[in-house]
Amino acid sequence: MDEQGGAQTPPVVIKKYANRRLYNTATSSYVTLDDLAHMVKGGHEFVVYDAKSGEEITRAVLTQIIVEEEQKGQNLLPISFLRQLIGLYGNNLQWLVPRYLDHAMATFARNQEQMRKSLQDAFGGLFPFGPLEEMGKQNLALFEKTMKMFSPFPTPPAAPTPPAPAAEKATEKPAEPPSEASLKELTDKLNALQQQIDALSKEKKE
Image (cartoon, rainbow, N blue to C red; front, side, top):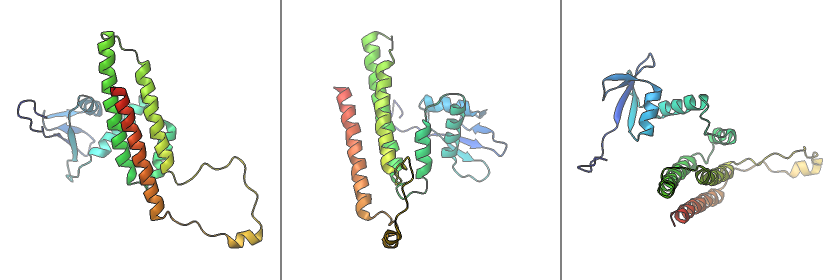
């Protein structure tokens, strides 16, 4: 937002060329993925377009930044979460995931800023990381709980079950797709989890 007039500043346009070079149209200079990462951390909005086709590829470039940060050892994404996320692609509950992730990350960012400010005020700039890490663990626990709820496949048993008798096999019914009632139940569970997150946020404010 513009501090003087209150108008929203348009995002910076980045063009990506066939040689993988990124061009910042605002500064008329070439930039790197590291430069774009610093822009994100600084709160600067940008959109990325393919210079040849004009297609917006912001999502792909942001994902590439995450991959590079992970390769540098900045490991923020647990392996279990990555496996669960991959398993949700093409799932009939895929449409719920972006909604939850958006809400969870916005809540985490809000709590993080409040925690940082209160600790800086209390300790005069000496910043103990313990409370913030504990808050992060709580958010991650809710996060992983929801991801497990989304998964339609339970954890397989440790030992294989014995084969069913022939008579029972004949009466077995094929697995049915989730009904509308079950989808509604999952949606209700998601809303309940969001309320838990909001309640956690309010408790930290108090």
